[in-house]
Length: 321
Ligand code: ACO
Image: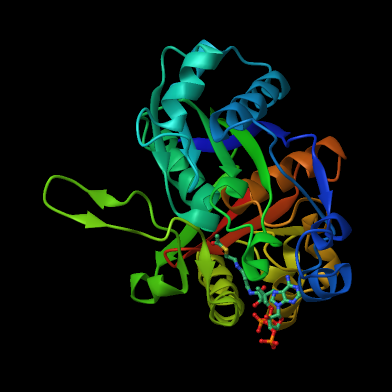
């Protein structure tokens, strides 16, 4: 089996920074409520850019950082739960914009676990010799599927995109994954698509994100540490040897609870939720790109990424830089 490494990262978020105080000007909420329960202070909200545009901008930066040409990419996977269209896929639109004409392209929907799932798929393609270079993107414009009258959900989400380029390599980089789904708990995070409206029936659907916050909180604090433990069963390293944990940025308290359950110092858990809120599939690649640009990641670092969210889905991956 081929070795696979991350060779470049990129991210892009809309310019429009919306603070908790600004939300309080039109919603019955407060900076105190939002920041004490979630750790969120600001989020980026699109004033016109769609999911594809954010993905394209993140992809261009990842390609520049990896010093490859777009036509070397033979696989593009976009993880998103908020695409601009049912068809074409976001990945095909990214392909057109960046002229990656040699790629196979498709989207993956695993909500906030989407990037971990997509990276798992792309890694498997390269390990099994079906691709050599892949562009994996998490891109979301959650503001278009958030109910701006529901203070319990809209304050949590933000818009953004992150991307990585992975490549066949001589040394081992992306090692293994543990990804699972719990469809039986799907009712805890939902967002309907279109109404069923045809010649025979007219049935409305709820087109906004609805979430049973406390159930999701319990799910994340239970299943994510268990997934990381499972991942480590097939790892040459112990948990203590991991340099950084890059978890889906949904809630500071969830990350803190997971660090306690794993008995790992909270300072090893990278957090930027304060600036971006929950950007679903984009949160992990945005964090990876920030860490890369800040030179926090250095060659040889061992990191664990882990996502959790709608589906319900969860998963973790072990990566050496
Ligand atoms: N501002 C002020 N008050 C609020 C707000 C708000 N924005 N939102 C809710 N409240 C009120 C509620 O109305 C309720 O009031 P009441 O007691 O008078 O009825 C009170 O605050 C408590 O509400 P809860 O929903 O019970 O608050 P909780 O402490 O559970 O915190 C939260 C809510 C932050 C959503 C938490 O449950 C959480 O983070 N859950 C995990 C969410 C998550 O991680 N999701 C990730 C996956 S998302 C995805 O996949 C798309």
